[in-house]
Image (cartoon, rainbow, N blue to C red):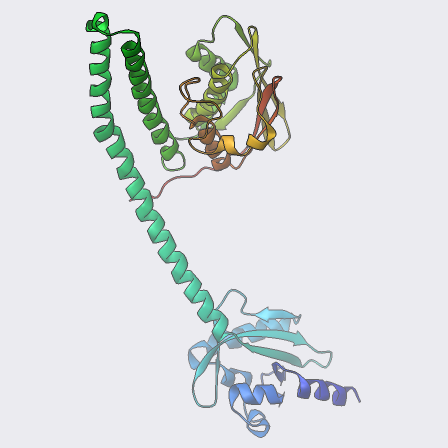
Length: 367
């Protein structure tokens, strides 16, 4: 009764199924197997499982079948390998085979024709290879662009700045108040353009140019950053005690704190400004914050401020390139951390970011 029930199930199954003896002989094949391989049931009974695969794979298959017989359990045959089935007419097809041992010592082999799936996988692999190739070309073009920006654009910009400075110094008395104001704006915008170019170059280097990871003592680095920014007398910057030593690319960590602290200083609007740098150990990651009592940010701008070239104030009122926070976001995400902001208008802003204690080491391809 059990044998009849199994046979009936195999007869109506949509997938090709073969009943195999321990020595590899075929004892039964369902109609789906007949359609897939092109043999009749009587022809199947004169064959072994090895006859169902191309000759070049038979020796390996025999060894794997012996391993399965020693430890029979349901599994996918040849996981991670390319398997092919052989039809009666000699044609081959890509296959997946599922093996299920039965109590009688027999094995039920289910064979799937995965030719179309393999074709789609190969097509996807080719598309990915093209995308990687295009990305490598784009990265090379970006590197060339950075070179052009650094040398070919900054040279005439410096010349304009020098000429404007000369006019402001030597021709000052010939200019009326309006002319002097226009000249001041010209010099200011030349300097802003110079700073913007530098910001773009710094942004483009993140993820493309890497340094060796070293032990970075944040007790030293954060104070060095603060000293370099020279906060005005009305702003007090405090740092939490016992900042940790982390292992990372030092220049990237320096850029993180420098951009966040500089951002807080730049927009400070209180007569007694306060900035605090804090940290916490979160087990597998470090948590840091840079808080200020400045003007605050409306919640609708929380995402926008991390985008390149985005500023919330007119550039002629508050000098900003709109690159600093984009650099912070790119560095943190490059290190597989997270960055976010909390703020209340008129009350201040706190930027938070996390860094894993084991920052992944990424190196550009060697050419």
